Structure formats: C-alpha cells, structure tokens
Length: 395
Image (cartoon, rainbow, N blue to C red):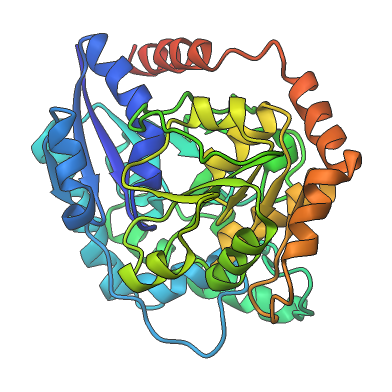
C-alpha cells in the first residue's frame, strides 16, 4: 500500500490529532503506512505512542507579535512566516524534505497551509482534513473573520496581496506557476469538510462537500453522576477557558448534578468548587455516556464535544477562548441551540443563563431539530467513505 503524511502545522492540544485518530486507525487497518508531522510533539507524543504511531516535528515559524488579533486567514499566515519570502522558502524546504524522507504519495493536511504549498511544489496530491476554520472560502480577499468588527476592504486586500506575493516568490523558486490569490492555495485534490454546514465557521462559504463528523477516538471512561435530583450537566473546561471561574460559580450555585472534566485544574480551585452535587473527573469522560445522560453541556466551544451534544439533541453553553472557537460558538447561537459567553466582555452571572438553557424548551427544541435532521447520519460510514477516497487519490 502507500505512504501517507499527516501534516499538522497550526493549533494546540489534542483536538486535531484526536479528531483524526479514528481515520488514522482506519488507514492503518487498510494497509497504508501513516507518518505524522505534528506541531506540538511534546503534548501529543504520549498519545501517538499509545496508539502505536511515531511522529516528527512539523516545521513552523514562531508567531510574529502584531497589534490586535488576526483579521483574516491571510493575517494568520503573515504572523507565521508568510510576511517574509525567505522565511517561507525555508519552511517549504523543510516540509518538502519531510515528504521526501517519508516517501509520501499523499499528504493529509490538517491546518497545515505550508504543507499544501510544499506539496504543490512536488506535485503531490493533497486531501484537506478540515473542520471548516482551517480552510477559508475561495474569496478574494479572504473574508474578515471578525464580522462584528468593521475592517476596510482595502486592508483585507493588502493582507492577501502580501501573503500571495510571498507564496508566489517561493513557487517561482521551484519553477511552479503563480497563484492568482491567496485562496487558491487551498485548491487541492480533495477538500474534505469534516463538519456540518450549520457548524461551518464561514457562513459565506457557499456550496461545499460536507462529510459530517467522525466518531470519537474513544479515550474517555464512564463516570458515576453525583446523587442529586433534577437535570444533569456535563462541563468540559480548560485552564485557558475564558470565564471558567464564573461558570464554576454558576454550576456550584445551581445545584444540578454536575460532572466536570477540567484537565490541569488548580487543586485549590478544585477544592473550592467540589460539592456533593458537583464532581471533578480525574479522567476524560465517555462522551457517548455524557451525551446520552446529561441534559446540557458546558464547553470551551470544542468542535468535537459541541457537535456530539447537538447530534444528541442537547443544548450547550459555550465559553470560547480564541477566534476559531468564537466563530463556531456564533454559529451554534445563531441556530438557537446554545448560548455564547463573549470572551471579550465580563461574563456576569451565568446561573440564570444555565437555568434558562435547562428550562426553556426552545434551546432543546432547536438542538433536537439539528439531531433529527442528521438522525440517519452514520459517523462510522464517514470513515469508510474517506478511506475509499484516499484509495482513489492514490490510484
């Protein structure tokens, strides 16, 4: 069979490799040799080793400090090496060498734009493995990712032009045709949108091929709920979750049976909020159990957890910590299936917000409408469809 390179350049934590793992296992079962290039080997190495894989560090530039948050995907690229053609050329050369050393015949790119560029210089086919955010729509210029902020079109064009010029300088050095726009970087053999149109970070994308979500990697374990009457709440938080203290206050005061998975929580914080009705888990939760038994969820706008609860017809309270999560949370709130806590504003008292999510049938009704729409959706079938598409690309 064939050698395949999974490429992950931007992002943090286990979300990317965890979401990809069921597909990786399917490819390995099919006889393919899968190599991993990951941006955070220190964080994901143990996980990959436990699954029987080896890995290499992904080439990437240190983020250039800029005033204010990124405004478009081109702006993100400029902060990670695309502002300087010489830096970008070095990154592309490193990616090319990874592809050569692994003998890759196909590149699976998970938020790895520079891997796309390197594969283009080698004429290697690419399958994008995208959650929506990682592949912007084919617009020129690439759209404003903060539509609640007024950004001049001329500024968006300037960002695009700078990134495109660096890309084309590198392509010229490898004897390849120039791109007409930055968006053209994402024109590849297969763009797989591993999400649903309602949850696409870019509502302006237009027609696209949505494959749906993949099944959980299955790393969690079942848990026992605290003995408390009434509704149940599952919370998945992180230390970087904006307003996590405010939501722990609300959960403690609400009195509902609550399970909290909060990896790396400060022991003092855990002791402060532990209660007969509120338990902290020492291990990842079994998401299938949580979506089946909880009445709503609190998440940091993790795509996997959020999608799982919506497919179960359960509303969510979303506490995004960065732009990608915020864009997803806005889509869920627009559906009327959850509430968004703005990370750039004081949270206020979240107890009535949670109480409303549990008591107001509108939230659950909208989540159930989403679940009903995709009731026939088979996550395991997606794995088989993706594997067949890989074989077609390799052929």
